[in-house]
Length: 469
Length: 42
Image (cartoon, rainbow over the protein chains, first blue to last red):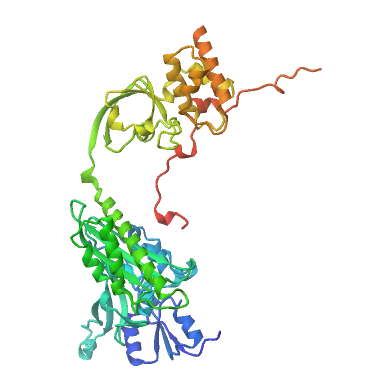
């Protein structure tokens, strides 16, 4: 593929770029990342006399300096947006959109401004920006020539365009011929807001068959929706907001029934076409399904963003662990297992299934073996807990620990602490257990490598030794 | 016939002691400071 002849300019200031653009209104192309432009030049679909490279203009980068707005330079690459932790946490729909665009090579060059100005109906950055109600900054030459000569100039005139007014049709945007898109402004989102972008595509680097962005803001009780925004890509001549569906959600509790109604209503704003990627009928089905899924995700994100510091209840508990007394401040949802492992750093107690099936987390609480993964830390107020770390007395191993070593009852060692604690609880109650009693005692402890025979033998040996002593 | 001291006899595994005392660090017993996305090779 051969490029036709053109002149390449790389202006150093926005004023120079704008005057070049104004001097050559019909024969100019602006170069951002070039991932679309250079393809079109090669295909002969565009034959400009002049290509103006905007990369010297300092239009790339993200800024969160101001409290109520996030500024993204128009020349910021998709890759830079993708790896921004601030974008990922504050504007997850945009993060998800850029993460699934094209390939890594393309994302390293392609820019957000380029994606918007190309105005493809399937542009992935558009639906997220539509639900965030971004505004775009376009700059044009200062009309006042006299003023410019005096050098008291504003070099250019800035115009804010709402993202909803930006797309005019496939490949058509609302910039004037003498304007350059320079910034994307994202407003700060209210509290209890969740958002997401879902994209259906045939292969990883394909463009969207259907793209859906959703944003939900919940009221202070977290029960009703105070704001909802839905935007669809690749299903109309431009990326569109699904206003009818949004209207259904505002002020309502977000039950499954209402989410389903909204998903259906999203179709009212879509006019999908048949093409080689998908039929219109399939697209309609997928709009419904993706809208439903996006609404669910956005809602659950809005709910979890609600769980900030203010709702956290702290409980003060007095607990004795391995003979030492502790006064701890624990949260309601903290388990005894988490408390032992994370607060007291007693990692000998293992976390396996988390649902009381494997017994790896067994500790002795007030003389009885319990699965510490199923005990809330606040429930242990006033209790005595013994963990595997509490069995060694004056540097001497417990007879059970010795017999586990000598009988070869340990391999990976993940079940051993829990197994030993179950066995200790047994021996404390029955110093001379039968084999059946041993089997019953360790029935709640799973071992996946050693097998149980050597473990049973070790318990028997330990019982005998303790009797003798 | 020579009598062997080790061959043919069971001997305790070297790592068993730290496993039965809970000292062994299994993979999920190790905590590291969470790194930002920039640190990851994503």
